Length: 319
Image 1 (cartoon, helix red, strand yellow):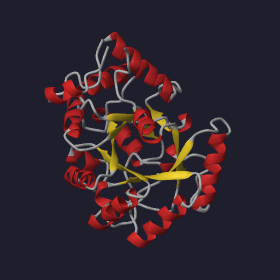
Image 2 (cartoon, one colour):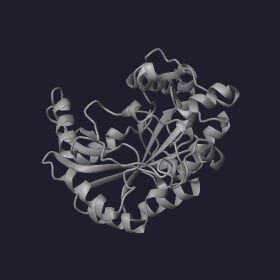
Image 3 (cartoon, helix red, strand yellow):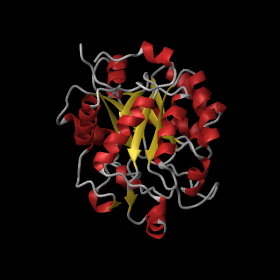
Image 4 (cartoon, helix red, strand yellow):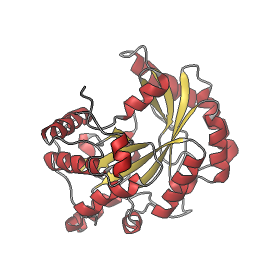
């Protein structure tokens, strides 16, 4: 028997729902504490929200309209899919609890929506919000996606995240205690981080009770604060070539906890917005194919070098 040499997140969703599900992005009008002056201004230095916003997502449209237009788009090709409302733009728990309840209820009122995916920052949840989401999780599917981005506070400060890694540990631990599924998001290649430090993040993030990991290579987006930082301090940045990134991801996967599911490996921003690196318009699925091929060539798999050998043996891949 031969199976994939890593755990794709679609396998987890298949186990839960018994079929393919699609996230429908929603912009519910949130902002972030590092944008509105609570913790800072300007947002994360790498962020230009339009780089990952689908065409049907506009905060001027009602939530149900955004959802319906997203469903209409995907059902042209995939009529049997089921759908999750993905509160994606900015920080989607950054509002009073009663407002959150109203917004989430609106999304769940759509007859084709079977659950929520809520993207947020680890410093923008508290006990009350998590208790509510745990209660909601008893009635419908809930997945929280935390932007961790790095395990190094010096990096988080440089990119103007406005939170610490310790706050991420707290949020993830409290979420797990409530039995809510969660994703952690990391960016690989943030300024000042060495290759060894980036690999160490695989070990650190594996210590946390997350279920899913989402990885992105750093892309320098035009007209962002990071673009200016890159132009002024290029020596602080390590931008991966495609082949280098593929090899790095294989090394990273070897160190990861073997029961983690991987949501994605790359970010695919519109080419005209990307200052660097130039990957020639390579699509996400093409990079995934290269990673799978490299895993096979190296006869390795996720968790092969994971330090907890007892856990690794429980999830040993059949090659």
